[in-house]
Image (tube, rainbow, N blue to C red; front, side, top):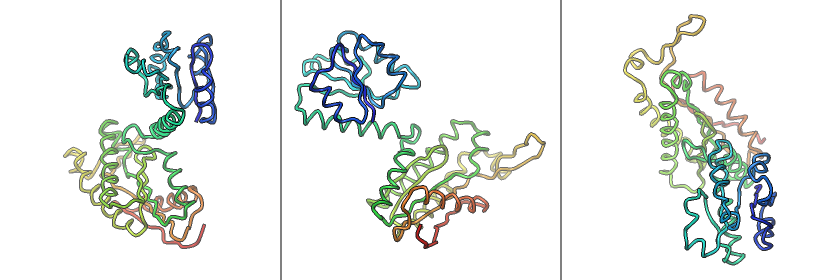
Length: 307
């Protein structure tokens, strides 16, 4: 991660050196510099602000960061004394967290590690479903491949989602995506297995991981629950005519069926994969085939050749 420390004059030796040792990239910005422009030119992953800067009016800088639609998500951490914490005079400033400078170096280090881990997780979290995003997905899958875990990775895709989104609007489309995420998450939760994971690639695409021995039952459960609830998102007129009827620019009338779900499964049995991209490509090939079939479908890749 890349960190920035904003100070009033010069960085305190203790906290400056500690932060510098914990981050891959670390920059100190003083109040006599153009703080906002410096950060906007090269945005960090996390910002620390020393108490002296805060007490001298640094709250306005924090509020400016927060109002920015591009950088407003960057976590900001206040470095405070015990007296500052007790007084609470800084509580109207929109910090994400704080560190007490009176604590031991070991305690401060641990707090920074916790805050950094949370920041990475939240930055990668899908804002709609609150599920881990692409970076977490790749990291999790690659970690299981590196450990030769015998798990199955399932790529999930909603069929005919775009026509539905165009017809009913983004808000209703978001409801379908959230409902799908809950179906998958709840099905895995009920499995009560440790080696499980659910991630949201983006849009109507998801990934879940489970022990290979459970993947068939899980796919069938996810499909059953999806098919059971999805018709509730359509109005009666569309259901009566078998889906969404749309006229293209060329005048061709086309009916898009009620949404279904496709699940492409690639097992890592026998340490078949060494890289995320290999599994992703195999899943893409399977999904391409399944998309040509009617209804909700899943397929487990049973090719046994080692990649």
